[in-house]
Length: 480
Ligand SMILES: [Zn+2]
Image (cartoon, rainbow, N blue to C red; front, side, top):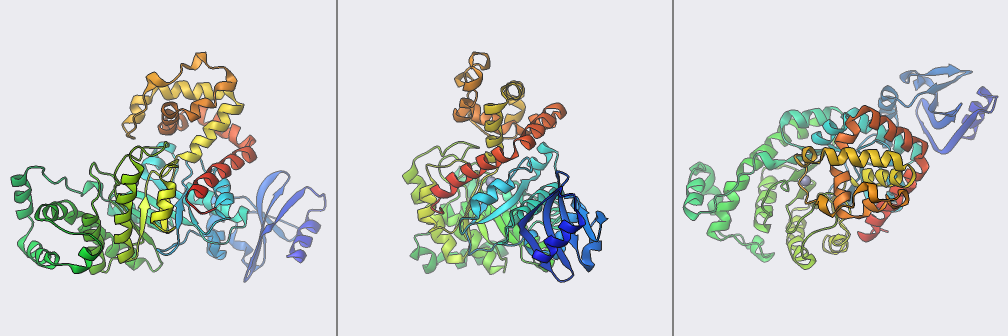
């Protein structure tokens, strides 16, 4: 490395260069390091594979911008910069970064733990609302990993995908994790007994009778406390059979054939009903029978997991509920995944206990809120503009996200002094207001540019803030 750094210094004798030595990476035919030259971020490469990168050659070294093409080349040559499967045996944490500026702060928090980060994690809804693409999101994560010199591996999650086309697109762009959102194929079981029987009888005999026979007597399930009454059995079959078929089809057609390991998560959480242990057991057992390899299942838990605020419900009820899901997951060797995990401090210790530290927790909007917090603290005018715009468009944002957020509980903006603005991020209703309106704020070009300009100028403060907030999550989850 020293010789390489010496070579760079000789090539740039005017001293207008700062080199981050911890990012140095070497592989056959390539040496690469992160630097800033004339205050511009760059990747400096040399070696016979330098031709793969786009950039300017100066005295035998190549100075390359941190763009998409160079990210792809870096991914190809330096393995740890590429999203990769984390597997079912390692705890993982979905970071999500709506702005593409939070990954470094997230990495700074995670690198002190045994938890692997899923740095890129976007649903199509989030991509749409932020006007970003999978490429943008994975570019940001790859560069952050390289700049941080983080070599432990990270994931990229095509989150809440519902169709084959969506999964295919996410995989094409390099996602290492697929979260299949089954909500479109989860059927709502009829409440009335007769209607339930009718729905049940409509399932083709061939399938229904075989399964009935199999599940009539399952000592294994009973041994962990999972039993099927006639009614729960009918409900489970009516609700989950179509979801199973979709999960299998996608696995067989798109995932297994890919030739690389993919973390496959089955999400059952975007529905009105809590997922019973009997349902979880059925889905997991059927997937195993069909040789569908999954890394996690996300049940819908008891209580409410609303965006950006703490858990609503009884913590002990949640503990009992989670305990059953963990028992089922342990039987089949996958992780329990907890969605909308931002700021659920009341239940994090329960999650740590019951999963014995083996979990997948997804957060997404919380690093955006940290950005809003920094803005509220240092740029009152910008915060006021954002707050007003968010209020104007609250109804629109509510159509994407289900939240309580009661605006009558929010202090009118014109009564708050500048130094009181950060309090809006603490108060749950205004917190949710800013949490769910990110798409509206970022789609307003003028506001978008003002937000980015501010955060880029205050990059280090934002990074520290994200790190602090992520550490709070990880500490509460027993990882720090
Ligand atoms: Zn979800």
